[in-house]
Amino acid sequence: MLDQGTAPPATGGKQLPPLQSTGFGARLMRRKPVERLVAEGGQGEGGSLRRSLGMWQLTMISIGATLGTGIFVVLGEAVPDAGPAVVISFVLAGITALFSALSYAELAGTIPVSGSSYSYAYATLGEIIAWVCGWCLILEYGVSVAAVAVGWGQYLNELLEGTIGVTIPAALANPPGADGGIFNLPALLVVLLCMAFLIGGAKESARANTIMVGVKIVALLLFCAVAFMGIRAGNYAPFMPLGLGGVSAAGATLFFSYIGFDAASTAGEEAKNPKKDLPKAIMLSLLIVTVLYVLVAAVAVGAMPWGDFEGSEAALAGIMKDVTGQSFWAVLLAAGAVIAIASVVLTVLYGQTRILFAMSRDGLVPKAFAKVNRKGVPMANTVIVSLFCGVLAAAVPLGQLADATSIGTLFAFALVNIAVIVLRFTRPDMHRSFQVPLSGVRIPIGSAKIPLGLIFPVLGFAMCLYMMASLDIVTWQVFGGWMLVGLLIYFFYGMRRSRLAVDGAAGAVLTKEPVAAGAGTGTGAKPAAKSVAKAGAKPAAKPAPKAEAKPASKAEAKPGSRAQAKPAAKAGGTAARKAAGKSRPKRQKKARGKKK
Image (cartoon, rainbow, N blue to C red; front, side, top):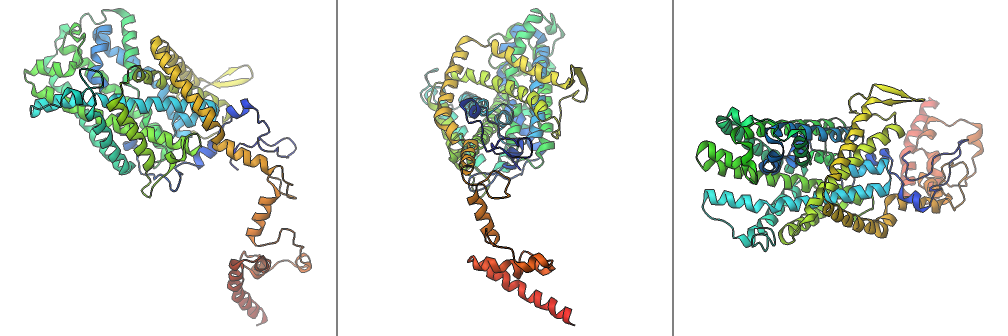
């Protein structure tokens, strides 16, 4: 039986009434059982999501959300800190992301639902922590969609200028308040374009994303092939000009290029085989992205002296132009950047809608976000989120709010690492399709044996805290303001409308009624009477004398037999009379057979 907020059975086989602990703290820390989370998977208001995504499509979703504009511009920020050793910085950042990715993979295989880290926190850390995590994800996904879409107009202008010689006016192509920008029309258009794909369905959106991811991977491989011809061995010396400190500083900057590998976990309720495919997709996407990053960085610093990267926002395009002496390759790379941004917007927007879908189903946000149409698409959710993100990108200066997405993401990563540890101790026997490495090796500590593999979630949590501490004070202030708004919404809306709160209140009311004899479930007499009436018998009917003296025949034992249909007919059921009519010929046939 799925736990719906009721207290566990007491000793002696008696069940305590639901929600014995109704204090303020208990309500904040109520947890949603894993079994209930999984059982409700895909169920929305008026319909359900469709399972149509395979492992490769899930992998492309994570790559699409991760491999974006970062690699096209991030080298200009990281190479001046690390020099040619930026290759090592990419590896360090990838290893840091790996610790959290392992935790995501274990929980995605254990709790394959759409809520990602929000649902994982709900099952392990309590409702208030889950809400905070979900609110961070809204910041990570929703605001980052707008932040990424803002840059689309600039790359689109580069592509248009290099192909047809026409550009969009600065007032309509730049962010509000930047370089004469008033309304960023391309940002709104790319969000609306992605919304159209999402409305078409998850399978259709995944197909479009796979094509876009393929294009941007080809663009990066093409860069490596062209720039390889310009590599000079002298550009790699000195390899580590600023020492290990510079390498680690660059690694902290590059870590944010890996954010997005968790996007596949938001598709848990639309995956064909989530328990097996989600862990594979998360790990495979991180591996592919890391290899691409290291390859691009190694070729880039070999083709251009590391000191020339200072202040370069389009280092890759500049390298291709210098190596070939033609602007064609730079235009081609700009086309790849346009596709890359559109892919990021599509996958991140998808993840945002699925997280809100899970939160709405739990009652923490309005029901409109959980409504599903006949095609298995949360239509209202998709339209609301897309319009909000599009207008935010086009008309609102994001400023420090965009930078706060980093701290929100790191906070969610930290909670996932904690959730793995908590679930290992609270549900050690639960089946896990994927476990962090070394989980089978146990170290005796006192009377307990601790899995050695838990060192990875601990390291992941520590690295997330380190990255958060490296962010500036203004980012922390913006993040604090965002959290304050989220807590106010929770206390005034979500806390009272939570499904666990509603179900628990209903259970508490039922316990005030007299308990039906022999029920043993803690439910009231009224629901018991209803269930008995549905079964077609009077609750207080006296047993027939013949039934006590004579064993029931096979015909009488059947649910549609005359013996059961008789009291049901008295109770006023047309269905019962039909059942009695259907069972009569069988009984007569059997009687004639006995007579012969």
